[in-house]
Amino acid sequence: MPTPATPYRLTYATMFDPPPLLHQRFDDALVQVRQRLGADHAMSIGGQPRTGGRWFELRSPIDRDCLLGRFPLGSAQDAADAVAAARAAAPGWAATPYTERVALLRRAAALIEERVFELAAAVALEVGKNRMEAIGEVQETADLITWYCDQMADNTGFDRKLPDDPLSGWRSHNRTVLKPHGVWAVIAPFNFPFALAGGPIGAALVAGNTVVFKTASDTAWSGRLLMDVFQAAGLPAGVVNLVSGAGSEVGDALMRAPALAGATFTGSHEVGMALLRRFAAGPRPRPLIAEMGGKNAAIVTRHADLDRAATGIVRSAFGLQGQKCSACSRVYVAREVAADLRQRLVERTQAIAVGDPTAAANWMGPVINAAAVQRYRLAVEQLRGEGQVHCGGQQLDAGALARGHFVAPTVAGADYGHRLWRDELFLPLVLVGEVASLDEAIARANDSDYGLTAGFYGGADEIGSFLDHIEAGVTYVNRPQGATTGAWPGYQPFGGWKGSGNTGKAIGSFWYLPQYLREQSQTVVD
Image (tube, rainbow, N blue to C red; front, side, top):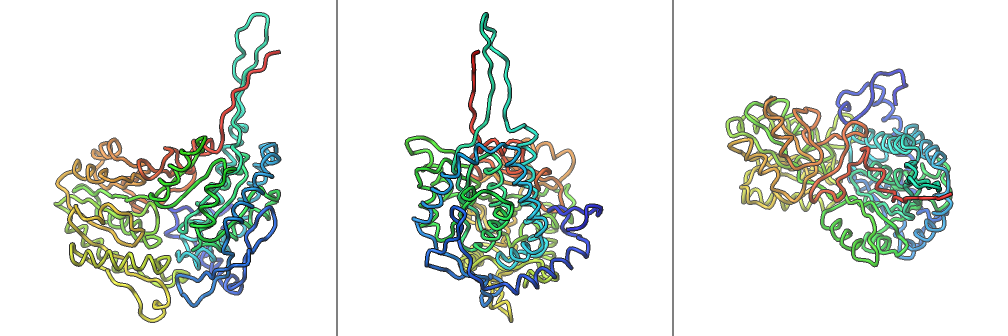
């Protein structure tokens, strides 16, 4: 990263005009990372590497001929052993003074920053992110861990003295202390394999829990690299453990483990809701922090700056190929300006450079796998028969693109009853619909089981109505950097309402870390 004296600071809001140094350092790191492709990588249980004897190959979505590495296909026994290792390490880690835990986690954050370009190059190859998205995610991971360390320190370990009881002839001392739960599982998604793993892991660890981390199979390399950072930071053996493999086997066994005290899950609404029911149905309820996606809307009124709106919508609809839970997939625009906005969206979408995202010239890369391509083809086929495709709508397979999972960014329309207005696709596809009023736009935006992010473009006298009535946990107004995307720790807390999240507390907020702790009231009478 730039030296501390450099005024530029990378966030998702500032990543669109980086200094040349970032590009040069990324290119240098990419050369080094490519030289190490194809290696075998172990899980880590109780501080020891484990392979398990079964392997799966991980290939880049940019080029299926590119073998990133081989990773263990973990078993239910591996999950059980990881939980046992975390449980054995839990008493010692919980008893470690919070100041020492904070120091170790700050060291991990510093190591991530030191390695930010190397790690970002790996993320770009593995996920298909463009270089600025990849650098941004790795930097965000360091910032999230640092934020939770700051919260732990600012709250002095969440240990507070309370008033003594007013007892005559006695001294009755009271205090409240937040304590860790025990063994915590972190189930990470493929789209942010560093930030949505490292952030929850950092929060759980600094709070005094031990962790079993299950990486997504599509991003097992990122999981291993993140594990390397925690080990290099000097965390004791067993405090954080890594397993990989099929969710139906190792993931399911992990989440069913009787010794598991709590978990953080980021993924689909269907899986998240099933886990919530499971965690509530046992002999005692267990905490689950579930982040479960979005179907995020942008509203554009007749008073909007249409250039600004089009820029923000395109960035949020097609950044990371629409594979963000915060991606803009619905647009409700005032009928008077709908044709004008649609034209601007089409022009900007058609100008997107799609290709190998590790090259600076390309802004959009591939979707994650063949299943995503098939979902895209099915959605486009439905739109051609039951709606309108204004631009895009093709799988891209010319030349080198044929070796990857590339599809065209797509702007489309459909009747409001169509399933694509409701279903989260995780694809570079945005629907545009016309409305007669701001009230109608807000009502349609709210008519969703999801409530993660929402964007608005309009006049100053309309902002209050949008903010008062929109049902979303993260809102952006007149923001060209992204209509519905771009939250950063310390700037925009990130968490969903309704079916997008179950806690009402946002990642990177003041209220997130205490979820990894439980309160004990202490009264001691002399």
